[in-house]
Image (cartoon, rainbow, N blue to C red; front, side, top):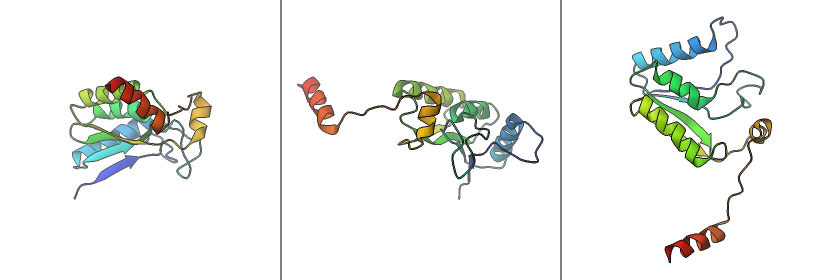
Length: 144
């Protein structure tokens, strides 16, 4: 059996240690104890029911780069990152950089975005996806 850890909250009441220390210690202990995978969220803000938007929330992909430098074996990834949060080329660059720095330990889950507050709060435009028939017509033109 393999064990995975999903690190989704950064508010640790009663713990005086800074977020970076808690995250690094958690990752190192997990790595040393044989946990196979550690994931984080791709959200900009904390989401309900885990916590309020005002609670601390680190950027998952940046945090995974930090964790990669603290660990040697554990697979690292975003549990799910919304496909509208970043341009596909930028997301690819972010993830391939993590994969290089972690020596092949990166993974990602992709999903549809649902938390409109994130787009509105940071001014990230939502994409208008072409409908299937329009997209098919464009592809058939290039294939001819």
